Amino acid sequence: MRKPWGAVLSSLLLLSLSLSALPLFAQQSAPTGACAAAEQKQLEFWVGEWDATWPGAKAGETAHGTNSIRRILDGCVVQENFSGGDSAHLRGTSVSTFEGKSGKWKQTWVDNEGGYLDFVGEFKNGQMILERETVINGAKTLQRMVWKNITPTEFDWSWEASTDGGKTWQVRWPIHYKRRT
Image 1 (tube, rainbow, N blue to C red):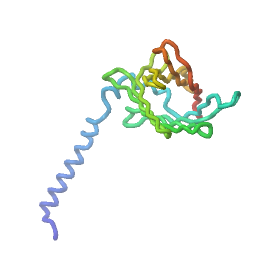
Image 2 (image 1 turned 45 degrees about the vertical axis):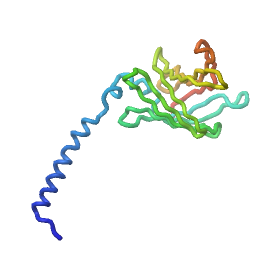
Image 3 (image 1 turned 30 degrees about the horizontal axis):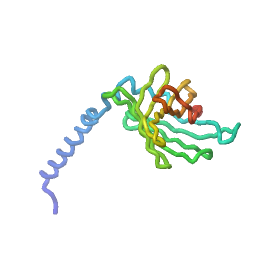
Image 4 (image 1 turned 90 degrees about the vertical axis):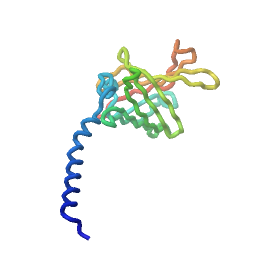
């Protein structure tokens, strides 16, 4: 059964009005707040494709992996995809964002070994430090990641732990990153 022309025209008018409102909606949903904050650029050095190296299992050996870092969700989130390559079974991903309300960076990491880690921190004195508190073998332990010696083409990252409330830190996994060209 055919629709009367009046109904067709009404439908087209409604569709036209709906489509004309899309640009207004898109403008209203653009990133604001923490996503527009200057601090949001503090992890920009990390964005890109990286080759990673660290001390291997045997003395004198060098292990290799990769890390791919990109911005997602309108640039509000930094997403990491790490692979230990042939050197390590570990594969994982993280998402990081600057939360304006707390004035801190927050990161969540998950991996192929069932790991879930959550971190909070900041960029200060040329280093990004994200840390967390956990319990290991019944002892309160602080864990942190430190990005340091940052240049446009390379940086050092280390996984560190402290069992004395942060007075001293032991490096558990040092990784050197070099940007892929």
